[in-house]
Image 1 (cartoon, rainbow, N blue to C red):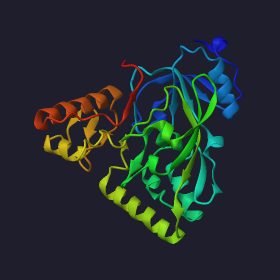
Image 2 (cartoon, one colour):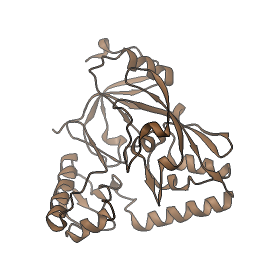
Image 3 (cartoon, rainbow, N blue to C red):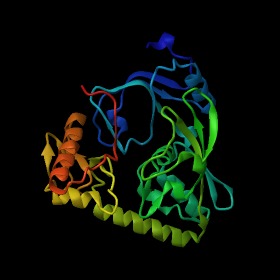
Image 4 (cartoon, helix red, strand yellow):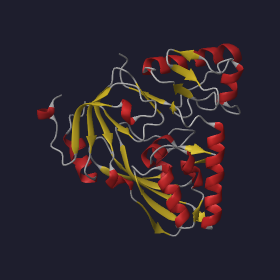
Length: 298
C-alpha cells in the first residue's frame, strides 16, 4: 500500500508515523499510515475509496491503549481540531465533536448549567473513545448520557445511531470495526454551575489522590469483575510494584501499569499478562483487559 494507491485527501496523510508520542504509555511502533481528515466529508471519501481489505483504527488521546512495538498496519485515523467543538443544541443537551476531550465536554456542560456529565472530567479520552468503550467513572457511564452519535462506517457512509443500537455493556459497545465516531449528543439534567464545578473538583481531587496521574500510564488496565475490584485482586496476588523491564505495576493504584521510562510495549503487555496469571492462580478470577492492545508484536 503506497501513496499512489491511496485515495486523495484534503487533510493530512503521513506514512510510517510514530505513534509513541501520541499515546500515554509513550511506547510502541508506527502507523503504516496516519490520516488526519480535514472534515467529515474528507473522512467519508477516503474510507469509501480505500481498499476494503485495509484495516482502519481510530486514535483519540491514546490513554487506554498499548500500541505494540511492531506498529499498526493499515490506517490510523486521528480527528483534529475541527472535530473538537462542543455546544448546547437543546435544553440540557450538548452536541460534541468526536475529538472533544472529556474535560472540554464537562466544562461546557458546567457553563451551560447541565449536570450529570461531571464524571467525564476524570476520563482522559475523547468523545469517540467514550462512545465506543462506554467510558465511565464514579458510578456513571456514557450510556447514561448518550442520546445518539454520528458515525462514519468503514464503507464511508455517515449514519446516526441512537444509544439503543449500540447495545452497551460494561466497557463495550457493538460499534462496528473500522467505524469512526465523528459526533455525539449527550443529555444531562438542569444544574447550578457552582454545584457542578464543586462535583468536578471533588472528582479531580479523588483521582489525583488515588491514581498515578504524573506517570506514563494507560489508565485502568483490567475490567472490574462482577462484584469485585480489579485492583484488590491484583494487590492480593502480590503484584504491587511488580516489574518486567521498564514496566511496573503502580504502587499507588495496582490496576495501573506504568512505563518507568524505557519500557517497550512488549514489556508492558507481558507485565499485564503476568498479573493476570498470578491473579488467576491466587483467586481463580480471570481478569479481562480493559486497555486496548493493537498492532503487531516486533
